[in-house]
Image (cartoon, rainbow, N blue to C red; front, top):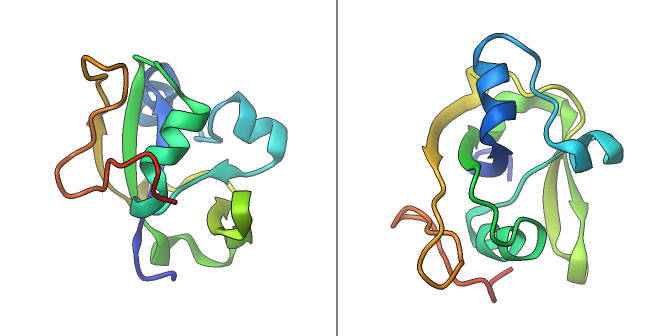
Length: 122
């Protein structure tokens, strides 16, 4: 699993601070849980619908999982599916792309065409 791209939903303000040099530790829920929450492409839309519904200030951060080393763990989440969790600050060298994540007219996030956007997928 470590050879794939994984995704994180970052708040714009938090991401700007990280780009300015601050360590990126995730959103408040990540800091509370002790790890940065990530999703695979197939889990992403459902995660956004469940944990960030209607959020207008998101940036989709694509990360090369292989660059995260042993701090990345695949752990069971809802329904027993394995989710990637990073137990360290996110190294900027692992980030392969970032894109704004706007809302569509139906209030759901609009993902890039190469990422599944069916919120029922996990």
